[in-house]
Amino acid sequence: MYHKAKKNKILTALSVLCCTSVLVLSGCATTTTAKTSSEIDPYEDFNRSMYSFNETLDEYVAEPIVDVYNWITPTFVQTGIGNFFSNLKDINVVINDMLQAKFLQSGEDTGRFLLNTTIGLGGLFDVATEVGLEKHEEDFDQTFAVWGIPQGPYLVLPVLGPTTGRGISGTILDTAANPASYVGYPIQALSLLNERANAESTLKVVDEAALDPYVFTREAFLQMRKNLITDGKSTLTDDTLDTDDSKAADKNSKSSINIDPAGFKQASDKFSNAEKSFNATARAFKAASDKLEPSAK
Amino acid sequence: MLNMLKNKSIAAFLCLFLLVVSFNAAQAAQEESAKQVVEKFQADLIAVMKQGKELGFKGRYDKLEAAITKSHDLNKIARVAVGKEWEKLSNEQQQKLVDVFSRLSIASYAYNFKDFSGESFKFASEEETTRGGAVIHAYLLIPNEKDVKFDYMLKKKGDSWRINNIIADGVSDLALKRSEYASILERDGFDALITKINEKIDHYAKQ
Image (cartoon, rainbow over all chains, first blue to last red; front, side):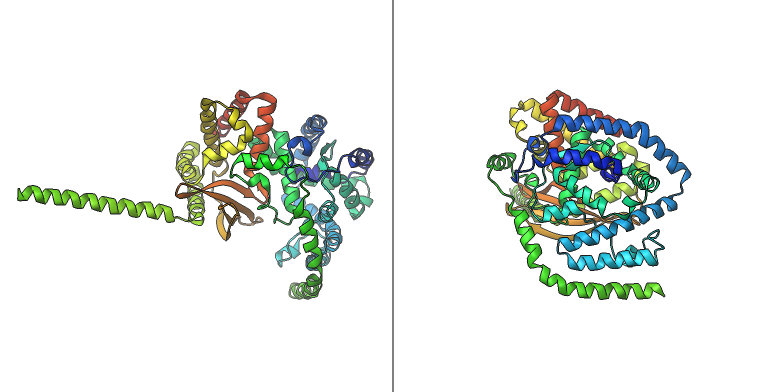
């Protein structure tokens, strides 16, 4: 994915992040459901210039390197490298499963990490997916969202690409929780390169489908994040999908004291389900170990 | 005289027959459920993909034009895509927008679904929305790749169900378009929007 490639963990960029997060925290106080684009993206002019800066950087620096990388690196090696870094991120996934009270999923993801680290030769092979332990995507930004922290403004950072006020804090913690962040620049460069190479097809979609690539990227990024945060359950409550008539939607957007009820309900559901999840976790661990056994033979 | 009477009764019978047939046909159309509309569209799409190479862009476009206009409410999609700007447009502009928008939608399908490598759609579930719409949840299964979740939002237009939004893995096509179009209309105006859409169509057609 494009944003991920750019969003990746370069330590030098952390200093940029820290500076910007101060700037950002001042701006994340509103919690209305139907926001206009200027509320979601108050720094559009700045973001647009960062977007073009990143595009240029991508075109003249990243793309030529990735072309060479694609040419000299066989696909199976690229997949292996991708798997390796993805496996390290699963530690972060487990932490965030727990923080969001998804105990069943945390059991599965722990099993996944153990399986891939051992039988998958340190994560080079994703054997867990093949036995039915699918990869989940969880991170600190999603956890913060589940806890009810508002999204904050949309931002495009130099090199790192699209994020939000909340996403910046999330990325700092994600970086801290990722072992790959502590091993030195060559490894991080490899991770970044590999992700950018895998993003080729996504980038093509933006180029080909977008009338305004900046807005397209912003909308797609925010919707994808929302989908991850709600684990795919947000679609029906989303006002932008209401095609009944556009006037109704406009009316909604005018009532400004409109605290996001979905967020609260979701958080309370999460906690009331926690107890059930404890029982399920035990089962998940058992299921994971059952899955481990036959494949170990 | 008798002959005439006979002719008359034949004519009357014919009329009655036609009436019954057309009534039945109308009823059949009415009874086509939201799920059937979606599944018909998906089947049409897969059929076009299977013949994709032989048909070429133009061939795919023609086949998909029928499939899409039958199953989608393109008028409404175009209207919602420009949001409240719709009312500021003249009748002529509205017509023009619906026209280029329809061509863009069909062209992008014809461009993106050009060949077949074992894809199939699988129905998952169906639900009603609070405002009388329907949502069909389905998956696009691609061999060796992760399934893509497709949610089709439908509304009744007259007697038949029509798709007015598709959400792929949580990303709403209509919401994307609405943001893009609103932004272009606001920054560059109506003519620029039409020019950009036409450029896209040309780009798709050049494949």
